[in-house]
Image (cartoon, rainbow, N blue to C red):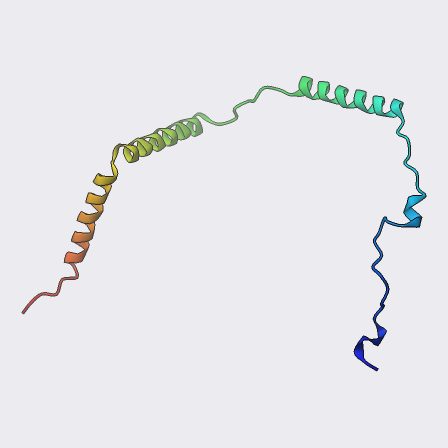
Length: 109
């Protein structure tokens, strides 16, 4: 006997296709229950709007000042980066690279 003797040789069976599922009928949805669900949903939305309060800032004055300074420094950094052109950045990097190489130059004796 070969290893394939126990394998089924019938066609594949798909779920939901065939005699069993063809006999089922769809249930009709109740229009009144649907209407009630819509009313409940709208009433919940109304309650959420009523109970929703305006945002209250619970930060201390020191925290507010810190955040303000952070924003100010970030804007300064952005403006500083935006003011440099690509040519200027390349020149600065070449100068730094040249200075870094001076430390590795072998001294002649």
